[in-house]
Length: 165
Image (cartoon, rainbow, N blue to C red):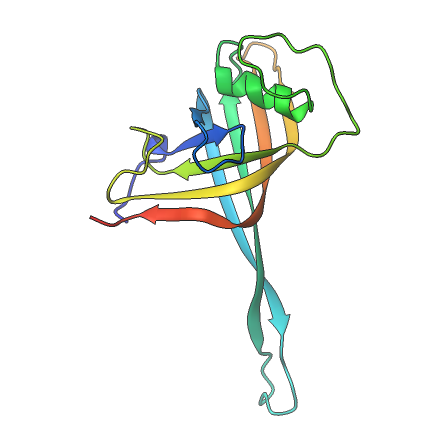
């Protein structure tokens, strides 16, 4: 992948785990962080010549997104509704909250291209099922409001890397 400016990365969200679900771009994004981590499984033994040895174990990850809070942004408001376990219903004010409901699962497409939610030739992207594990609203004096979300990736990516020609 060629070097790219950070401002061309984008996050798309589907509020249905169906692979053919409709994706919504998370608007007004100012910071997107995609983290993948591999667990280290130690295999050191008496034959290790004094050096520790490891194998790669399970992989886990998170996506963190910070946006300029915008009540007109469908994806932002749908994330708020989904986090509050009220379900996503575009254009409807949600007034119910069920704290005992299951964590909401969404599909995330982390794309290194803002032209489309569909993979573009030569553009890296990753699609994961994810849980929304945190949401925060930052309302600083004399500044615009920001909202942040953290998503816990769950399971292997359903697709990745559109580098085929």
